[in-house]
Amino acid sequence: MASGSSGGPRQLLQFLRLVGRLKRVPRTGWVYRNVENPESVSDHMYRMALMAMVTRDAHLNKDRCIRLALVHDMAECIVGDIAPADNIPKEEKHRQEEEAMRQITQLLPEDLSRELYGLWEEYETQSTAEARFVKQLDQCEMILQASEYEDLEGEPGRLQDFFDSTAGKFSHPEIVQLVSEIEAERNSNIPTAAGEPCP
Image (cartoon, rainbow, N blue to C red; front, side, top):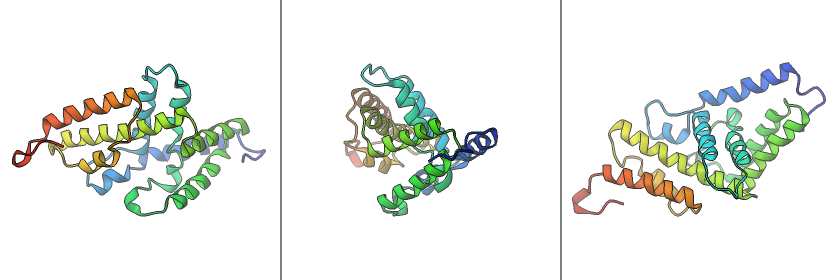
């Protein structure tokens, strides 16, 4: 995965420039919904990492969760943020991202290269409790962001499809509580249409 010449200052700078692109890759879901000033991929990963950092779950390796959060979307600095609406098959998305991760990590010394690629693979395969927790954080952070955009735009309920797409996907007790709080706050802002109960 890593060549013998990897890991020098030039390659490190190349790596940092490459992942720095994540600051300028907007999250596609928001772009498609015409959200003004949509967040970047690195904005999303930063808050996910903080969410991992403040978990109270002693059964999880918190440090690993933070690392997974920081690496899980790293390939998007090359392939961009591929959204479900792009209709790219899951296998093809995985193939593109795998290739991108090999390209990114080969700029690092072999041990770091293996670590970063391994973290990405762990998240992709959902092979550990930490990876499954971070996947739920990913979706929780998304609906938190959706509720914030609704508040900022003064259009409660506009981004309902993001909430619908995550329905039933949360099982970790801390995340379930957080999602419940997000939804309670949001529902109090959504006017009841024609006497129907709020979703």
